[in-house]
Length: 97
Image 1 (cartoon, helix red, strand yellow):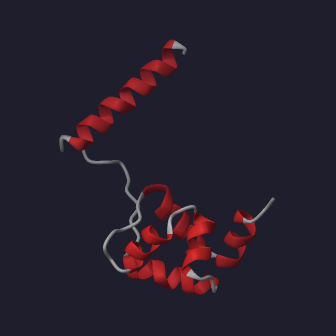
Image 2: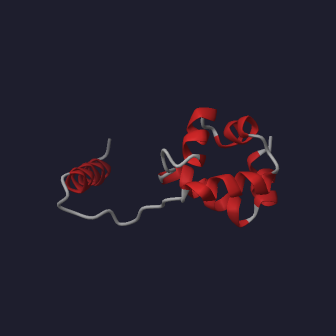
């Protein structure tokens, strides 16, 4: 690994540690309200199992999101935002061979 890459990686690890200890706030955080997940899935006309397979999560995870036991964050929330913005285009892009 090149020295510069190592220093960047080490800086990221230190930043993550500071965020976990509450010394620093994350630069961004994407959260999706639970009720929004059900609405987004409804706009795709997919069943829970089909939608879960599409976005790469378990059906149980999707159910937890829809029933407000957990909230999607990070890449899952970003993907849900994309699907919410344009469901047809998102489905077309995700299903490309």
